[in-house]
Image (cartoon, rainbow, N blue to C red):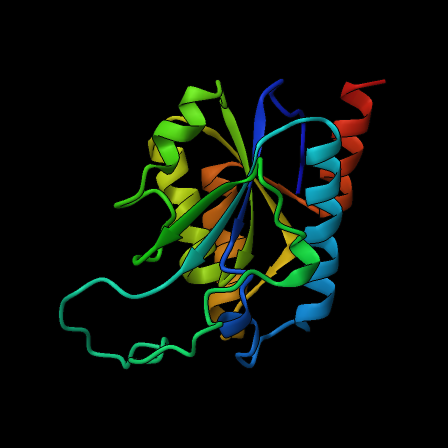
Length: 188
């Protein structure tokens, strides 16, 4: 884990921290993940840096060998962001129907329109939504940072594999507090 710097216009991407997903059995308790996510959100907003709240409202079409984890019929509040995120009018809000937040959405165009060159990615699930979003951001040319204590998964092996083997190849990893410390140093 080694965070070196944050670009002047870095966005925070909060993946699938929503009522329907938070109810799943997760590797790490969701309360701690949400607490660290909320701290990052407050820091980004305080510095007038973009915050993108991403929720999932479906799945990609096509056959799979494994059962899809999202319910066929979602409860009315399934996509509602968790209250601790304190959604604000200035937030970028994206609803996806794929694992990654860039595929089939306008997220990349919206970030580029505001001059974003780097993203910090957090949320659920580490090995699917977070990893897919980080891969897509990397492939789109953004610098990528992953706050690994502000994410969790339903599968311990997927969570660990992403953190240990995939994320270091996509960007820099560290804790939410380390990201906050970099933001503070930059403005000192």
